[in-house]
Amino acid sequence: MGALRYRRILLKLGGEALAPETGYGIDPHEADRVVHQICRLRDLGVEVAVVIGAGNLWRGADGSAHGMDRATADHMGMLATVMNALALADAMRRAGLDPRVMTAIAMTAVAEPYIRGRAIRHMEKGRTILLAAGTGNPFFTTDTAAALRAVEINADVLIKATKVDGIYDKDPKRYPDAVRYEKLTYHDALVERIGVMDSTAFSLCMDNNMPIIVLDLWQPDSLVKAVLGQPVGTLVCG
Image 1 (tube, rainbow, N blue to C red):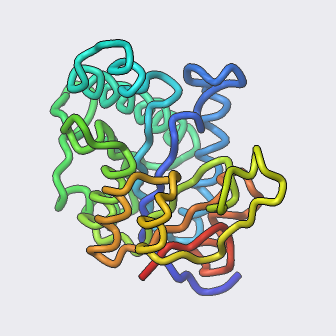
Image 2 (image 1 turned 90 degrees about the horizontal axis):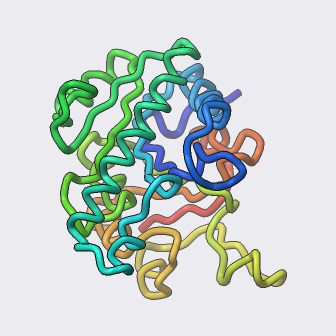
């Protein structure tokens, strides 16, 4: 099949990846579909860490838009990511993987606290880690948490898996003539205010030379192609 280009990855998933057709909640069938994609990576020998959002359960920005204290709304979102991580971990166990849920907010009854050295050791032992509760701080998105964790665990690449096959010059759902970028620099992504990730996440990756691949999770073989270094989605790098 070819040699691996990326042996350790940070996979960033939106909470919507676990949602049923209604767009809200957790569908175990969808969790199984996501895990099937991760199993293919593990079969290739790729070390996988996952950061998942909570858009299927709660968005802190929605709460603050209705007058809720922003820090409170964000903490609720962090807790929702733990629910998603536990659901995904359960699907992984049923698929024969050995997952570990690690959280930035201590909740030792259900998950391990995130400790950088322990997370790396889990991956070295062949375990798949799920890094939940964001950074543990309000006012930071799960995209920023993914960028931070990717740098901390010495990942080779940050893969942002979405429902769109890359980054476009405009919304491809609204504009049929939208053009997909095959490659962007960090600087261009920041200057053009590319909305697929927030500026803090892009800046953190730029400062630490962490490449980003934005791809469609459900496009056939997209993750496998990415770790093999084959053209897929959009690559953001220096």
